[in-house]
Image (cartoon, rainbow, N blue to C red; front, side, top):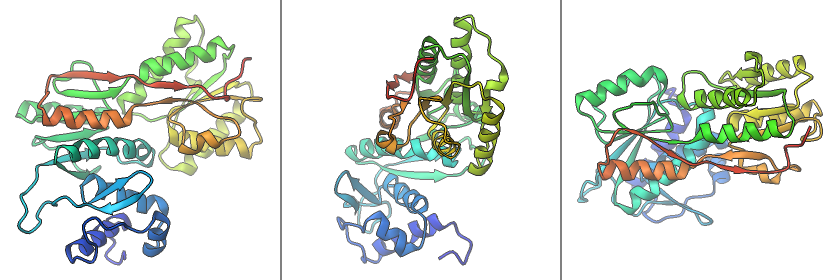
Length: 348
């Protein structure tokens, strides 16, 4: 499928759309399960999942919990004889693997709100493209600090859009974000209250405002407690998984005094769980673990993980509401996170 060097996920999307256009797949028809589709397209689960999720967001497919994925019965853009539906564009600015965990939940919120309003959504994965001035009726997901100037220029040009999962003080356009600062501050204070002083914050990505808030909250909790904190205890993360795992492994080897780890996102959580198992370090007997966004199988762990859950579904839903209802007041709307306490944090 990939002879023309087209990304595999895109080829899968194109193939499914072609089958729909040729009536091989009918409106309302149930697609095979994800495992069967992986075998059909000879691809990984993550590749297939990305293709299907993007088609859902675009309105080509519809997913129902507990039932499966269907060909959408709604008229699609360009359908013969059908009225052209309104289309919202969703621009994923930083489509890295670590971002896709939250994007799928956010997509569900966008898709369901748009579906109720008879609106289709087009998903744009344009990481290497500059943000244009013409951004009217766009939802811009996770833009970086470097893209802030382009967003302001687009706003001054007259475009009206909504930013999700990034925010800046004084932004003239609406931003919808999780109150990650408040949640990380509360979680760090809890670790300190339980006697932990040697806590590593791992998995910080540079250039993204919501990761900067994780760091600010972490530092602030130590400062409020009158405790010192060295930069050595805040660790970044390469996007490459193996490089990140090597970095964290070396960091753990240098810091045998560490009593708690704070994973900055779900991708870091996965790496740390694997690394701790390989090093035969038991949670929470030998080290406590708190995470931002635990993986979906976290509840099946022998030790349920204490985690911060961000309201991605509601963030996605609200972004569609704000855009369609033209609620364009500038500033940031922060949605509360939830702290789910498992058994992964012990008292020192």
